[in-house]
Length: 242
Ligand code: GLP
Picture 1 (cartoon, rainbow, N blue to C red):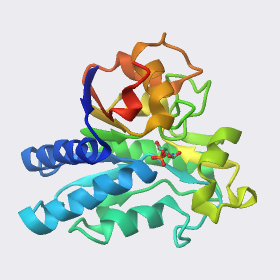
Picture 2 (picture 1 turned 90 degrees about the horizontal axis):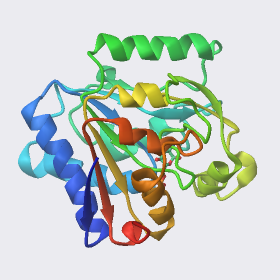
Picture 3 (picture 1 turned 180 degrees about the vertical axis):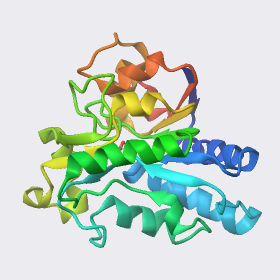
């Protein structure tokens, strides 16, 4: 793992966006692995700006998102499909057909998950995976005790995750789904390159566990220690427990 501690959230965010931009310029037909969450909103804003100001071209790339809530329609503002549309897809020149977000509404979810893995494989796998961190150490929605070899599947959300994400559901816990579809830890580890962005004091404990703690399925992010090309970017607040 390489670790870069930036003085503040703005610089950490800009660095993550710059790594994405450089990868896209170097390999225009790259397959990007994309993440959601509040942390990523600023990364996507910076990429939109790079598209507008510096002509960053998304027209040849593919994207695969990490996860989606089960039972939330893509047209609902609470879906991760809508999140991606709002923050990135509708604001840059990526083809809609090149964007992939797991389908949380499928009747046969297991078949859809297998199909997602197949589509990923057909694209040659993820070239650069952007990752955020849940406060419980989840990556994607791989909650504690996810197998390091897990693949795209349906998971039950941890009570702490539902709590952490309630602000996206009118702050009403009852509206937060109990299940999600997520790429597995094994799927994520297959990416050729990974960039983790974690900012703010609430992530300090999990950042330290991810980097310095023992490998444990109780903290999915520790699996990233096994990856040969993983860059962790934090601000100072998220690095205080290192
Ligand atoms: C959700 C996503 C994760 C993301 C996490 C971080 O739980 N499923 O992929 O890492 O949010 O969220 P935030 O950036 O809002 O702290």
